[in-house]
Amino acid sequence: MTGIVIKGARILGEHAADLVISDGVIQEISTSTLARTVTAGSRVIDADGLILLPGFVDLHTHLREPGREDTETIASGSAAAAAGGFTAVLAMANTNPVTDTAEAAERVFDLGRAAGLVDVQPIGAVSKGLDGAELAELGLMARSRAAVRVFSDDGRCVGDARLMRRALDYVKAFGGVISQHSQDSRLADSSACCHEGELSGRLGLPSWPGVAEDVIVARDVMLARHTGSRVHVAHVSTAGSVEVIRWAKSRGIAVTAEVTPHHLALGTELLVGYDPVYKVNPPLRPTEDQEAIREALADGTIDAVATDHAPHARHDKEHAFPDAAFGMLGLETALGIIVDLLVKPGLLTWADVADRMSIAPARIAGLTGHGRPIEVGAPANLVLVDPDASWTVDRDASRSRSRNNPWHGRTLHGAVHATLLRGACTAYRGQVAPAGGHLDLEALS
Image 1 (cartoon, rainbow, N blue to C red):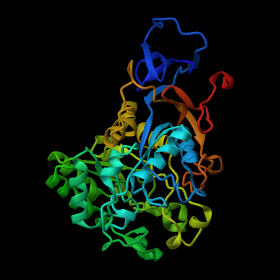
Image 2 (cartoon, helix red, strand yellow; image 1 turned 90 degrees about the vertical axis):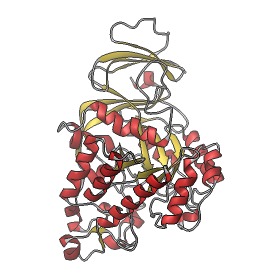
Image 3 (cartoon, rainbow, N blue to C red; image 1 turned 30 degrees about the horizontal axis):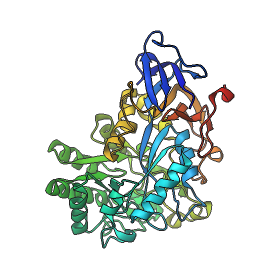
Image 4 (tube, rainbow, N blue to C red; image 1 turned 180 degrees about the vertical axis):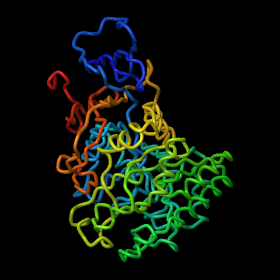
């Protein structure tokens, strides 16, 4: 593969440097003149004014394959991820069939490798068929070629405390982690779709009280303390959950947490128009919860940003609000939301963005080739960001097969200029490489 030279990039938003990349790794970094001659034929990216970060890692992506290829495939989701600056995504297990066996995990892994735009790491189900009754093949999935380390029944809560304890005990042996969809079904059943409060009553929508999340988070951190194993809280949405997580971390309990861009930026008031694009699980929350999760992400109580990218066909989403599918797209817009909501107001630095969107999620998932410091010898899994660029979201231009995009028509700031996976350019100035290939920078320049 031809080498790449990145000239004048501001590493983590700080000092400008030139990088030489070949054979998939960073060969040289210089803050002055490159110390050695660049090999003939190397492609040069002029990165003056651009910020260089480790490629983003998404802990929570729904790629729908196998089973719902009409809404997304591993190839189309990988293209959306590359366009959004991601070099690795973790694919949730609620496919058809469910990713609850080693064979199913290896199939997802192999399809991701064939697409070649991002590293697709399958998440294994905690329970067989996501039924919450019997443990799935956790050990076999861990020992498979896919080397699964994160397990989740996302979309459903592991409600049985005994099963959750057994799962935590089991994965401890190989350093695994259980990612929990925290929803007590007795307090918020599968029909619940609006935060419980005055608005849910006025709109006549089945209510989802914040405490239905809080009590599962509290139970699981105590189980993590009891077992000495790791629990990860998916899509945190309430101030109560933040309080529990902060308490648990102060006592050294092995808990980590993620938050989605849509829970940070979108509030309950958007449901007034009954637009099903805003139907998500957990539901959008009121201002006091939004403020708590923003503060928690800023101070590190919440470790990571995760998109919960959830594509849906129009015929699944365009229903009366209570009957519509849960979920919205997020891979291509995550950076812009974080820049506008947290970077521009000064709540996060660019180094913080690297931590919350790359370093911490890679550490949680055990992806040793991602979220690495930008240094000589590190894999060239990188994203170049134009911090001053503004762009307007167009749902019809999405690389996803679905169009349930809540950000359509919104102007965002901070654009992905280029994404590199092991030195191969998978996205560049709005172009995305074809599956199994990479972009020819000379042809695009």
